[in-house]
Amino acid sequence: MVQRGFTLVELMVTVAVIGILMGVLVPAMGAIQRESRNTGCLSNLRQDFVAIDAYRQQNGGRLPMCEFLPVVTDDGIDGGLPKFLAGFMPEDSSSWICPADQDDESTATGTSYVYLPGLLRYAPAVQADVVTLLLSMGPSMDPVQVERMRTDTEARAMTAFWDGEGAKYPLLADSQDRHRRVGSERNGVFADGSAKMADAPEEPAQGGGTP
Image 1: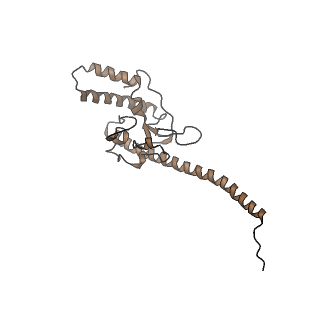
Image 2: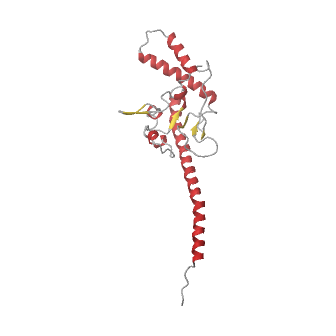
Image 3: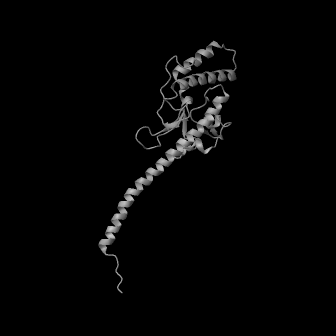
């Protein structure tokens, strides 16, 4: 019995079909991976919100007030929301890192997310309120009291802003564009706990910071 092998044409057709399938499957696999990372990021942000919300419940509804991003020093990571909320969620929790974050400088800080109230606390309108309050307190306050009053004023201003604009702007968002898609390439979690695409907030209006 004569065994028939593949002809050159059949081999060429087979190779062509495999090439076509690979051309279809590789982009699809990439899209599936991106969607998986996006889903993981949204899940992380919801978990981080739980810690923020727990802090608010124990502090009269006020938002945490700290640096918008941690910094890496010779003594380790300093500042930022993960450290500030360590009593509510482990500082090294994996939920602080976006699955799509491949930036060593970002992950070295312990978080992929920027805390927007910690950034907008430096808006001129808020700092004007801070200066006005501190000037009214007189020169007798020690540095610890001054820092406490400054932070409290900033927290009040940011809480008032997010209580009014919370549906528009995220509390916590990707610090970089990481999710390729139509629209915003960043995710964020909002004051109601919802996690979705996020846009950066505008600065509070002059004179409208502190209630």
